[in-house]
Image (tube, rainbow, N blue to C red; front, side, top):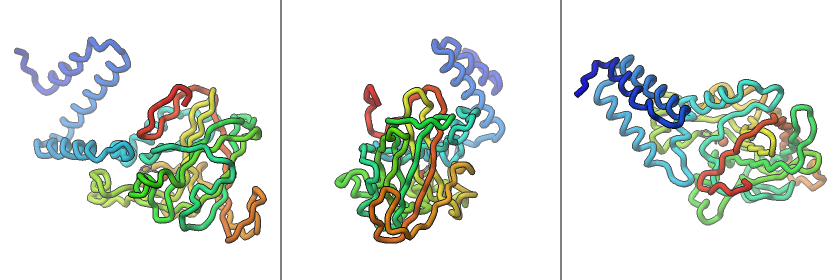
Length: 304
Ligand code: BEZ
Ligand code: FE
């Protein structure tokens, strides 16, 4: 019966993965053991603290449903999501910056005609979004599906509301770029909002005296064949939380100036009945491969 001191224990656990057939899985597991053991040694972790951590992770899992992902939220607030983003996007070469997917990429993104008001029944200041998708040289990319989603005027996503089950998606849609790489739609001006604080991750944020806010933004996921999937947000310039996003997701190039307009027609020639805002942003895609994530709860299909 082998008996180990604490450093021999680490070596023995690392060694126990030696026969793992997949070399990458073996590497990841052995490095994980090294880092976890190092953490326990460095902190002299007590039994109570270890039990607390197990309970915290158990509650995090129990909070997950097909449309609520508490583990993504945990990864986001610990900066792990942005670190994975950073190590995978070191060379942007002029491509649009990326940021977190977040936990609210849920449900269906139904394709809608350009110009659709995706927040038609919601209160809020009206906004027209006009955009274009190009390659790194500015060549328009046609036929690219672009998923968009954002929070309402109270700071909630559709999937956080009881009405989601009966009324389906709102403030989320898919647009497909035209021959000139363009797409456009109507919506409301989003506001800054707190991440969910009714679960273990939100409790941790509040107990550690961090604020739970994200600056106002619209999410975009563009998925063009032959290009890296682009997962990003466009942030609203002037938001008071741009410097302290709870998930560390802001990048300067993703902040857009939103123009306040009083013209009687919007850029697609249709009438505007109230003053409105104009968001203009162009996305530049980097050649490459990759599979865009599926919305939570949606099964992958062959040509998705
Ligand atoms: C979001 O922007 O939807 C989001 C991202 C990370 C954590 C919580 C929300
Ligand atoms: Fe968001």
